[in-house]
Amino acid sequence: MTDRDTGRSCGFAFVEKSNRNEADQAIAGLNGANFEGRALNVNEARPKTMGGGQSRGSSGGGFGRQRREPRW
Image (tube, rainbow, N blue to C red):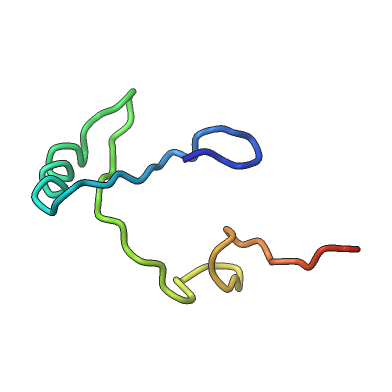
């Protein structure tokens, strides 16, 4: 995954496996593994929840940015 503005890596990615057993093996084998000096955190994706515990009064999504209407 890359930042849409800068093109730089966001530091996370999504991987799909064909079955639960393959996914479990990948999680067990890679979670905590060292990659370029950093520990990997590998887990199963969870669906977004409404409200999601965002800080600064955010209503979820957009990393705290408010949605604005175009100015035309």
